[in-house]
Image (cartoon, rainbow, N blue to C red; front, top):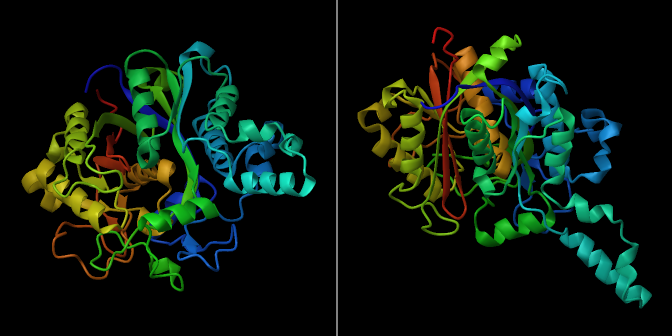
Length: 424
């Protein structure tokens, strides 16, 4: 491990398992599914009608009227709420650090116009006969679609004038955002970074797109809690989720000096690109294996020091096989003793926020010595012969966890999260 030490002092979450970090962790630990019928639009004619949907979320309560929640997308509201919770949890407020020493790093899907809005504008133009009818739309809509608007809101919340990083690397987004925040603190560019991700690809357009790609399972519309089946022989695709998960990272000595509670330490970061296919993982695990190797090497734990792997574990046939092959390549004989599980079996795939949920699972496992389960692992795939903690959580000490995030386009990211070593 090189550079300055980086610790995690706060976290916040809005997920299908709960609208704060505590309830989300309890849902993971208890093996509770947050997947159910999709109610954000009329999906009756869609091939997939389920999702890991955030429910009972009140943006005005979670964010506060001062932040004008109506100016943000659904995903942006999740990210801001999670970020504000993380700051409260860490006891950080403007003035805790000098503004130049603070930054924000967020992963999110790239901003784009809402297709329903474009349809509405086209209809308005036809009905009115006025080619400039679109000017009646609110100018705030242009800003709402910008992925960096929530980042700017959190910059204001922490009064940050240091690094501001917006990342859009699909399902690896929050892992990259955390990794780059880690680097900023290691290299002395910041003392504190607010980092994580947010996403909500549960619109009719996104659901239709994933359906056309054949990436989602369409076999469990009437039984949604059994739809997400990572590592199971009957897996047939992922389940879309949504949410936001954000962390406070601090330079270790500065955090201790202000009396912060340290929940875990970020030890290593690896990032690679395999560029094999846009939507598929390579069967030989290449790219993913290198990201894991780099993260473990930087962490200084060796493969023998990793107890838990929070898998990317999407439930697609190719990804789960590729990840397992990569783990065997990296860990060798140590792979057989690892405990591995996938939070996506409970929450669905939070896309750009997915790795944030995995990091939250790693922190909970380290703090409570409980590894969350992989739900719906009823019939193990004979090719996937590692320990994926089926059905129920397992009590076991966790010194350090490897967190994986692999994305469309071949973007691979791994992080190592460990218990804080107070004696060094």
